[in-house]
Length: 77
Image 1 (tube, rainbow, N blue to C red):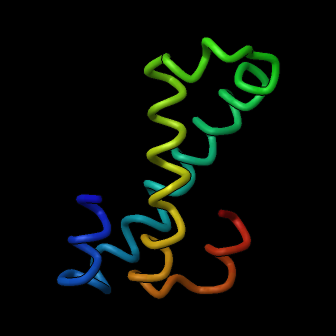
Image 2: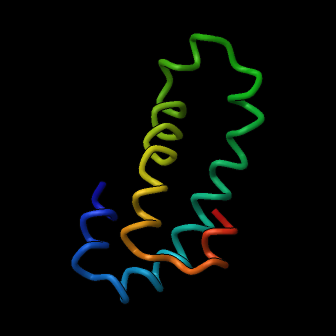
């Protein structure tokens, strides 16, 4: 949410930082958690890892939209 709000006011600066630093780290984190969450049962929805994944996935689309990311960055997402 913070990144989305900043994206509205600091567009170009934040766009470069997000595409170079944030998106690769978010993608890597989600990739590491994917096998764990795919095998997890219903109790997993109460874990901090699940809540973090959910927050990232729910905010990623609006972040990309507000920053008006290029096609290469969107392909990476």
